Image (cartoon, rainbow over all chains, first blue to last red):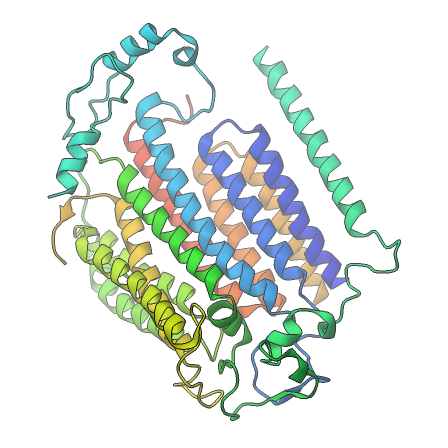
Length: 161
Length: 257
Length: 83
């Protein structure tokens, strides 16, 4: 009964995470739903190794082949890796979201006219976009080509100092 | 039109999710061939060999005993999860170290600069308390890292706790949070992990093999390369998480520690 | 002892649904931190202590903090969620 409760709650978290990924518009809410999905998957993996009445897998008394009162240590080892990788993925996704907000001025996930206009219209929009929020902003060094107008070259020069 | 669209998307997602849940539960509780998900006892699982420390010689598993105080097991860590993560499946942990490194490099590359905003200093209570709390955080983190092979913990949560100590310093004192020393320390620790693996390759024939004699099970200095690798992983994760958090908090780059 | 497992499980699922349907982003991130902490508790109940301390220190503390820092940056650039 306890094992069934663990499994069911982990599986429900996975279902809620999938639903959130499919229906939300705000990018930070989508990332929260992805994180809920990853939490659910980790819980599900650990609960596959739970035995009723098992102990934590640390050897404090002599054990032998007929006396193994532990829970399964292999899913725990896999989940340890998965939690840390989830943090790395979330950090990188949030860095990309900050860039996206600088460019598009919105955190919604809808396409706007920029995606449907012609190439010439998109170039005009990019050249006139108001990116004057950072102090060390460089000018648009490549007018007429599709290079994004954040001041990447200035940032690279400053970082290589 | 917009409202109608949202309702249709929500209903469609709900139907997809419920269908997926229903099919998964049917597939998992299927007991037609006599075996269910819980038929395998610990004797029949892979962890049987991990717990009895007889992976290289599986025929010895049925009469092997492991006890604290015994010497020269295949892998001398008392914490079985640590021995699986750092010794038996070290290649997966090395892949995870690489993924964290790529994430930290990506955040450092892609981060935007902040506007010059006027920020108020932290209050005197915070400024007095933070050095004391930082001391306890770093000591606790170091304890958790160093005793990874005896108690629950290890390099990953210990490194996160040490990084939390440094994050407190960034937030309370407004010192420049992007420091070069974090990145240098992280790279050196990563190279150290690879060096330990290559030494194992040349001495014993397989990457990340345990080439130091594993001592007594349960002693503080035991378990060969497990202690060294977890120490390096702790330093690497602490430096990485502090540098990722420094990039998110923002500030000027400061050359030198 | 079993009743606490059921209570925690139900609270986690209700909190997960609340994360998606709350109006303000700040409330969503706080609720997500609470879900992470409850998941660490359930892992400790399953006698997986390594995983519990890793999830508590990385999932509940650092991930929530990173979400808050990026929300603060986005609001500095002029994001207003009541628009």
